[in-house]
Image (cartoon, rainbow, N blue to C red; front, side, top):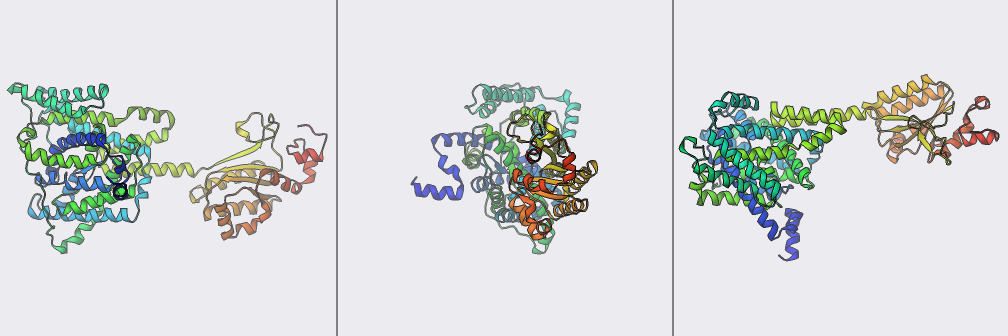
Length: 588
């Protein structure tokens, strides 16, 4: 391809275009085939959950998959119908019209278009920064919880014991235990074969299409089983070819759909960005959340006009896509292409794919997604993040996926606010053993020189905003109460990057208290943005510009003459060089 054309494509589609070659195409085509095989039964099942005819699940695995892959940011996220979206859509539309009816289908398509418009607006307005508030701990809990959900729901098809559909994870586990004597040995054997072959090849020959080989091996075994061990297959497939269709909805009903579209947008975007960040963490790719939102929005806008219902990033197809060796978003395009070809050409053969084999592969996907080594690292390093991850995992299992994301994000923000609301304030001094008398944190250095009885040296580490103002004010008050003789305070503010009006009031109060007690307040190297705030609020004028110093030596040299000379005459510490100059016989 000419360089100019390649540059244009890279500009619109992303930098991955430059990495496309014969090797990546082969890998993407192989991964796309597996994706098509996985989405066949899932698309049909999810459409049923959404209250739609089965072909709508296949439609939604075509158009949205291609558009989201090419217009989005992630190289590995595969979009399409999901169980969470399907259940949420059915729950919101079923009270309005009978599920499965023509009116219901039209409402589902209209809501999909509306969701796409909202998502596109979020991306176009560059509000993707909201996704930055999903912390790594919350993301780990979400992906691990989703892994457990994938494995639990796959257990139903693996056992083939008559466990009913539509249950939550707890219900699936309970019913699976109760139906254990009715488990189909053939289904268990087929599922474990798919799992074992794929896991073994992944360990020994990761470059091979191990999941596809595992699926084929299990399918062959299923055909050789005796009739009494016959396993369920995905069955006959409807045509997946979508046609252009404008949703036919009474415009008077559109206002009733706005709140539902907003809620579904949050659900879909929360899932999509969490999955995209999870894939990026595993692949090392950087995600542009605005572009990801835009891609998801366009996929739903266009999909809604091609008989596709609500789609978003799918966890149980994105992880296999990455595990199968996908290199670029063309794997998603290949998945849609393979789906058309497979259903059109090989429908009778595909109908014989065992559901238990797909369940076995999904269990392998769940195991790789669980990421136990990262949990162990988190347990060693940060108990707070471990608690956040654990709570998010529990919420993912017990609540809806979008609620789990919100809970994890909320807990992360609460933990962050608590940590930032208690900025460190460290007493500084001089190192007795250092020839150049360098500044040190006294509490961390056993060999520190004593403090000056009149001048407190304090290092401020963190921002002073409304949430931290009380803590800082209380600490400063405690310093005055603990040692009233230290009437002068020099604050080293190089690490104080920000303060708001409440922070300014803290220093205003401290200035008044110090001067009322006969002392004063000084600052060392405040940030330019802090100086600007002090200037705008008038605090710098009240403080005096001669109370702000560029380095510690100049600060001490300027403050020393302002100390009480009578106290200095009785002092035996003489920690400053200026003290020794006044008393040449002093020995430190």
